[in-house]
Image 1 (spheres, one colour):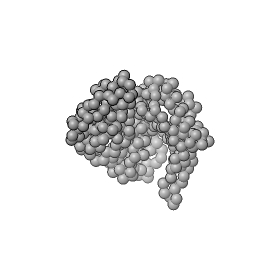
Image 2 (cartoon, rainbow, N blue to C red):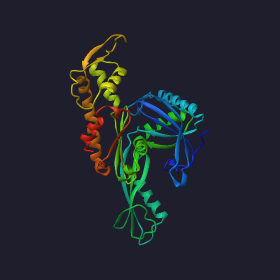
Image 3 (cartoon, rainbow, N blue to C red):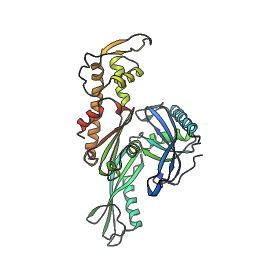
Image 4 (cartoon, helix red, strand yellow):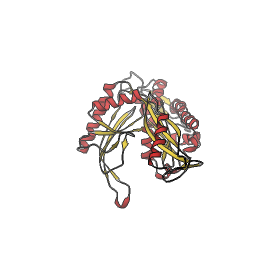
Length: 367
C-alpha cells in the first residue's frame, strides 16, 4: 500500500525525496497518465534511483483547452488509469502527486525588504522577508502553487544564494511565485478526491516537464521547455537550477487536427492520422505532386475517398504552427524569459512530434 509521505503543507511539496513508493497523476487535455514508482537510495551519495512499477494511460474526457468541462467524465478517466497503474504495480494508491495546466498558471517575481539595523542575518530574518514577499504576491482569486527565492540581497550586495551569517542594514529577496485560478484548480482536486485519492503535492505541468526532460547543465545555465499538449502548450524557463518563468497558451495539437477536419471535411481520427503520417510544419519539395487519400465525413470505411495533394494538407497545418510558435515567442519576450532562459529550447509533448516542427521552431525563436 502506498502510504503518506512527509509533506510541507505550506509549500505543498515533499519535504525531501525519500526512499519509498510514490504515485503521480498527469491530467491533460488529450490523455490522463498515472505512474507508480519506487525510489531507491543511490550509492555513495549518488542521486536516488527510480524504478517504474506500474503505468496507467487513457484518453482524457471532459477537458477542453486544459479546463474541466464535465466533472463526471474527468473522474471516470482518472479512475480508469489509476486502476490500470495499481494492477500493474500490484499496489494500492492512497495519494498522488499531480501535474496540471488548468487555472491559467501565471508567473510573477515579487521583491521585499526587511530592516537588519546592522545585525546578522539568521533563519528568523529569512523567514520574515520571505513571508513579506509571499504576502505581497498573494491574490484572493488565485492560489500559489510554487514559491521559491531566486536570490537575496544584503544592502548593495545582490545575487546571494544564502545570506545566513552576513551583516547589514537591509535584507532583500526576489521570490518567483506561480499561481493558478482557484476555481479550476479546485474542480480538478474534487475529481481526484472523488476517486478516494489524497493529493500529496502539486506541480504545474511545465515545471514537471522541465524537471523531467532537462539535463542538469541546461537547468543551471538556462533553458526553456515547451510542452505541447492536445489543448494547451505550457512554457517554463529555467536558470541557475530554478524555475524563473512559466505560462500556458490555450493552443495545442488538437487545434491543428480540428483545422484539418474543417479544411478537408474528414473525421477527427482520420485528420489525426493524416497529421501524423503526412503533415509537416515546413514546405516539402514535391508535395504538390504527391497525392494522399482522405476519407470524407459520412463515408463508409471501405470507400476509397478523395485524393488531395499533400501540399494542401501542409498548407492547412502551417498557419496554426506559425501562430503557436509566434505566441510562444511573444510570451517569452514579454516576460524577459527569452534571454533568461538561455539559447536552448526543448520541445516535448505529443504535438511536438509533428515533422518539421523542430526546424521551424529553431528558426522562428532564434534558438
